[in-house]
Length: 74
Image (cartoon, rainbow, N blue to C red; front, top):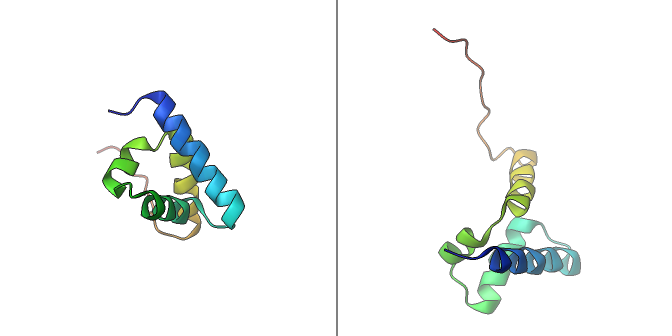
């Protein structure tokens, strides 16, 4: 289980990749993993809530998320 410090460091590095390379957060994570040799499964554990919300916003903009339908209770 990663520490909050490790998660914060990972988030800062991903934000740096985004600003320097003009790419989105999802692409930044993939490139970061490729350059550092970090496995994507490990990177997934390092994603904090702030980074997750940025990725979720991107996925929503690209229609990659299922639309949640509201239902009345039966």
